[in-house]
Length: 167
Image (cartoon, rainbow, N blue to C red):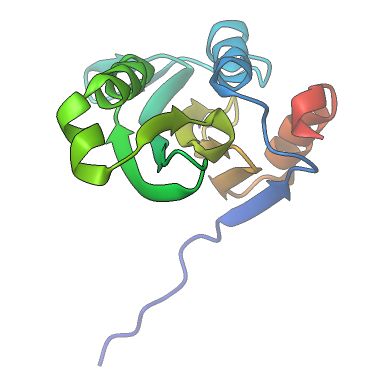
């Protein structure tokens, strides 16, 4: 009978943030800085005949939570909307808070508190050593996954130490 033999060992490392990332603007600033600035010195790579950028977004999700409050500021209902882009996220907030039929059905006035929102984004990176790994960001943590070389974690950890929102 055949056996499964270990062929590689990949690692995952998580940094729990001391405080959640303040808002979507701060979140996007961090992501944009990585994608445009390439602080981890990732490299262009080729798979088959397709060339990939050093850092690419592999998945993202943004969820808005709208609370409905009665005249006494008591929450009487909530609505959540998940969108695949920041544009969709912002459009959903606008549409939900303007929906008078929904306000009537729930029986309250909509109130969007950005502190209740969640968002996440995963970047795919190609290291100069040939490894492809991911770095996932959410409001309260950063996760490095699918790497084997500890130098990758060290490089990202050093970078994150210099980003106040990622303390």
